[in-house]
View 1 (tube, rainbow, N blue to C red):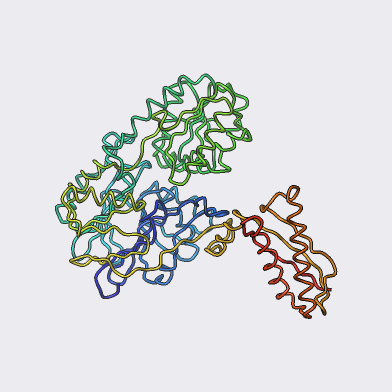
View 2 (cartoon, one colour):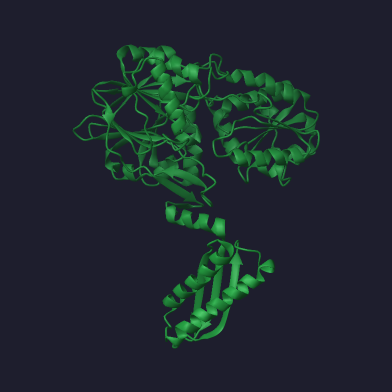
Length: 552
């Protein structure tokens, strides 16, 4: 805060998975750490994306120095295009992160609102009062970084998403030497990834997945389809390597897959010979046993390539018996039902399907419990804030910190909207606004809790429209009432219910006419009351009642 101790405000990503965003404030200036999004839950009908509430930042727009992005996953960079609709900001990130972001900003028409600053792991960058150092970490995307920021009381170290992979595909291991150097200087506060804090042991190396994929692709009698996250460049590399080694060529499928592959190849993060790549349009003219399709859709997204394959509706890929499909990912929390539905559809095509846990076709990009304890022992922070995870993940990470000797009173388990004052003795500060912003089609922020509540109501109980024509002077019913329902009851078997509802509507309107009530607003209230009460009596449900009163 201006004139006071530094502080960090958590605007997303704690107490939930996704929407990672924090604001570090020092000397009256603000450094935004990540700007991610999340995907809607089942009780958010019609919502496409969920963003952090930018209100806190927009109210302080003139104080923002820059955005720092730890890596290129959607839950850390996905809301940048939406934030840049409101602001023009410098962005500090590694080469691949900026390359992946480029297409998103172009698509949203805000590329000229961003000033790119490429950072290299191991270098120091100063932005306003913020002296930052970047350290490479291994994750399920190349070019991930931890960032250290100098505070008056010591170093704040933010891990980003990480694991301690001893044999990463690109050979670039987590820079434990650089992080240890920060520890020797004194890490005042550590913010650390908590996603796999509940998982015992250590997370397997990414390199263990390659041989499994090779065996599956080699033994596939016909077409092989492998679905993964488009940004998981190391996984895409292993899929391509397995295909080439098996004498096959690769067809990339999905808009985000094409964007990620193009950016990664242009910048040297993905190595695939041009002759090994075939356009997906050529698939129908090729022997299926000579191709591997590298596809998006591993999370069961409704219109994704894999979902369309499962429904036998994809334009280019028609799955058949003896085809092979691999889901090389783990479910994002909340996506389980959609993924299971797609997997069932894939089995119905007759294809052989490989997925976790039945086959080791995926490893996580996040550190498990023993790695987290190793990292805590290396850094030995004075104060600790577990981040990136639901409450159970944060709580279990706090428990691990206690096990390695960090006193519980020096650990803050926070949630969205919490702040931590970062003076000599850090402490929780005042809460700030940190809600959700919903993206519905192209509309942003125009869908709030009231609209969601109405959508949930419609989904649960349906809607009944009551149409009636009345005399504009006397309120006398001239035509109707006619009742139309959607999602309430099946009209062909509930005719008696609607006849009685129409009768009660007519009775209510006759009583109003006798009292010379002709105001349409009042008549609508009477209709809602009469029909709503009756429907609840006979069905114990409360559909949305929409009266339409036409005056003549």
